[in-house]
Length: 59
Image (cartoon, rainbow, N blue to C red; front, side):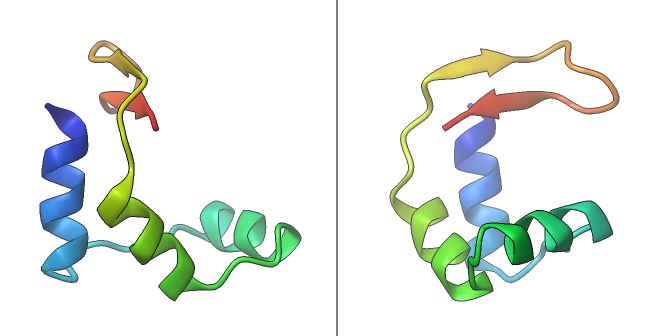
């Protein structure tokens, strides 16, 4: 499951926030620590394994 891989990467601090992601975080007044915490407890709702340019999921 993609979400599990994302959670492992976040726990290992093996991720990066894109410029677009940072802009969205600012617009939504979110802190990195809040996203890290939310990722740890997130539940996957839908899976998009063929999404371009990378697989994706809705959490």
